[in-house]
Image (cartoon, rainbow over all chains, first blue to last red; front, side, top):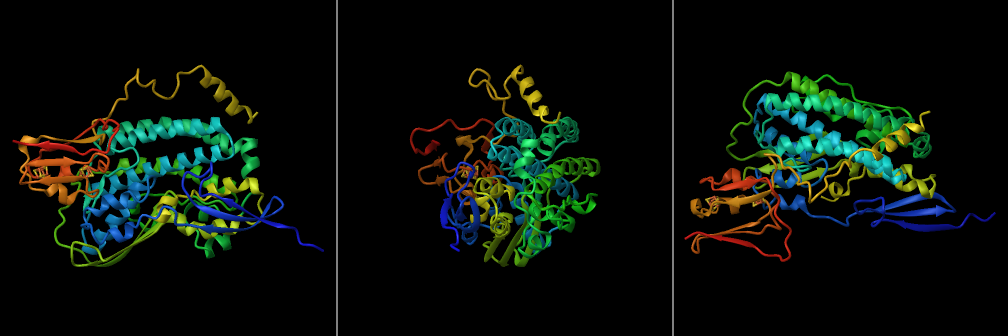
Length: 361
Length: 112
Ligand code: SF4
Ligand code: SF4
């Protein structure tokens, strides 16, 4: 018997569903994908090398610009790494503010993802409505930090901006009303038959595969593995009571559900942080230079990010290595594509929430 | 039926105002904190060059001999770090964005 004819279809780096360049060579038999071969490196910027030329304090602003969506958490992780090496005790208030901003960043990132996914399966109205909500979160971020997506509010030793108690109360009030709107719109994702038709049972990643391929974040938790870096208790997360959101089916729908539930969890964490935050200092003075190395691990909206920092006692770091969540999720993506229909590829690529600018650094 | 939830929402929004601003008739309101663009009070500047050394984007150029302070607005990433480090507090972050440019020009401020 003849084996069916195989064709290679290039997907990306320019593709309507991809805001950023990643390239996949899709080996297809008829309409079925049998293999996916990724290639990366179209927008590499060499930021890890730049660290040797910029003062370690100034580099926070560069680290934040590794990604335009998880920007705050990139800056935060870098700060945590330096603070650990220099054994700096960050004031409690700063830690709580870091939690609040991290969760706001998760909110806007997940809403962005929901919109993009709706767009990927052609549900334009849902896309617009989701982004309308995201805009309101961006307004809160801009009001408190000065930037819409690049917060610029974390620094080595603390934070640069404060949120007054009145403002915080107002934010909580607003978030309560947005939660209702978010519920309305996410119910469409959860219940709408056309959405389910595109997501349920598509791109299943088993628990074993998710774990052994080193997947992170919602991609991992949707397959039933309960790993969330926030449980390490960095910043003020040790004072916050929450259980990582997990699903068991491991399909696209489960990844969508995890992100939806995390939206409400984020709102809850912001409320807890707002209830516990006490007046106090925003930063401590940093003097001297770092000497030593540290692995900082935090949870971004897309999953775990690792910053490895090695300092040698000068103002310039010797080595910085950033392992971003999308990079960790690409093996999982390559695993879940074979067997799917060609038309499902855009949605599947999106379900790992790819952020290529992170991946390329 | 579940399928009509979205249809109802879409129908409702047909009768609502657009979610976007009717720019330029409705101006965008900036927040007090918004990081827009850098402004300098050149008379106060002592041309120490601290801002130039710290700027992560290398957008600034300070020339002590010629007494000028030059900013490349297209390079500036509006991080506001120069404002923090200036010893004379002559830099401020304005909350409106720079206007679009037609040429890649640097803006030169010179004192005296
Ligand atoms: S840091 Fe301030 S005083 Fe010094 S050169 Fe820059 S603007 Fe002038
Ligand atoms: S705001 Fe940042 S990038 Fe712009 S000139 Fe100041 S330090 Fe440089």
